[in-house]
Image (cartoon, rainbow, N blue to C red; front, side, top):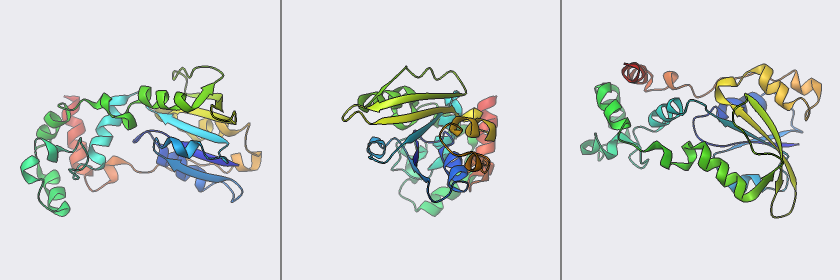
Length: 216
């Protein structure tokens, strides 16, 4: 059995990956991939878990901070509001992020057309999937969990897709989604391990202030 947690950035894929990797025996391979379609074209993939957020604003805010100090990312403020500091070292850029007025970061965030990024847009991600797979029914993306059989277009190989809302990632939902595919003893071992939490990163204090400003 080969499971791939596949999809966009900042949708809980690391949480699902770590939860399964820590729970599954060696006979069940678990991988993670961010919108790399070739990962799903591997002959051995049996199940693709595709998490997505209903609240895209939260996804974008989390993505904004994920690599906020790296100008090579198009949504880094060092390409706009903080461009005059982009030549500094990564360490100094991190210090600037910690000290800058969060309202400046809010202004910068609002300058970005977030829907243009495929790795942060579920509509574009779903369109990418449809170029390589046909589905027995169109994913509605309205239920907490949807299990939809798919077929690889190039050779007809079946693949099970599990679409799960980030906001609904829990042990009951994750266990329930996989119950028809994995043995009961494995299902009972699955525990959710929350990972990559923004407020626990080096920019945590600034991120909290940013969220407060966005909520005003």
